[in-house]
Image (cartoon, rainbow, N blue to C red):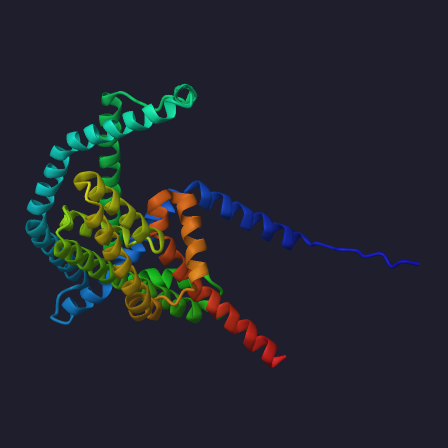
Length: 348
């Protein structure tokens, strides 16, 4: 006779499952707010060590954070004053040459059209293009969306700075509050965990900014040496896209190749541009990332790629940019859990 298997679930377990489900559902509803809070935490982790430096000269913590903000603002103003004129000139030159690029492209399209018309393919291609849904919107709508997006971004930026300010100034009170949310026996561990996550996030952001600067500088110098147009603009793009590991540098290389090819029509120079990006990519992968990022973050490449895909799915490009620090924070918790389980198994 077969034994009957019975499973009993008490009320407490059901309540816990429902509570977890409600928390996850509510977190999804306010995902954009949680993202802003997380970005503010990352920024706070970046500026906290600098604020401590100012504190050593007897500045109150609030004034120390303001001093850090002013120092960063002055730094970016100086950098902007140095590169903005050149960037503006390169953008103006690219815009001026855009008409020639369109003319060349139109000529090439006509050539291709003449070729495929011989085989009766043009009518089919035209029908296919005509069948695509129209995606154009009016200029007024474009401007309205652009203005709205700008002000949304500006408000988010200000909110992040304000929250980061209070995260740094009220650091101990916030840690104490988080500890008190946990049972008393776990409070010391929670306080230590928050400190380690904060340090890890700060280390990641400082390392990422350093990596962005190095890659952007190397690309700029390489393009300058081979005489490629828009060297500073492309170097800036390479530095910014470096924030998205793996995919960012690839995108920057493709964009730079297309820009140089369409603007100059010089295949030799375009191949040199490709070579510059390949060399920089190899230096980054084999020297910079192991020395700078892996020692700081220590994430497995597969984990990084999966995190990027999830971040992109949830929040687009911005989500991808902050997927690595989110994975970094979770890795601290995961490492502690694995260590706890190993200790439990060895004790048993």
